[in-house]
Image 1: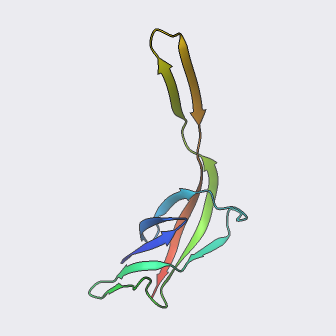
Image 2 (image 1 turned 60 degrees about the vertical axis):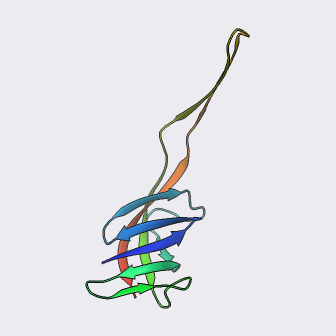
Amino acid sequence: MYAIVYFNGKQYKVEKDQVIYTEKVKDVDPGNEVVLDKVIYLSKEEEKKAGKPYVEGAKVITEVVEHGKDRKVKIIKFEGRKNYRREKGHRQEYTALKIKEIEG
C-alpha cells in the first residue's frame, strides 16, 4: 500500500514505516503527530483511488522524528582575469517524518 501526498508545496510517494525528509515544519516538536490530508493518489492491493484533486476521506498519519540541517551546498561566483571570487554556503533545514499509518 502506498500513497502520493501533497505537503509543503511538494509531492511525496509514501509507504508505511518510511521516513521522508521535507522542508522544515515550524511549531512541531519531535514526537508529535502530523496529519497529511492532501492525498492525491491511494493504492491498496487491488484498489486504486485517484483524487480530483484529493481523495476524500484519505489521510496519512506521520510522526516527527527530528529537525536538522542538510549538508552544505556551496555557491561560487567567479570572473576570470578580474580577481573576483565569492564563495557562500547554505544548509537547508529539514524535518524528518516517519509514516505511521495510511488511512482511506
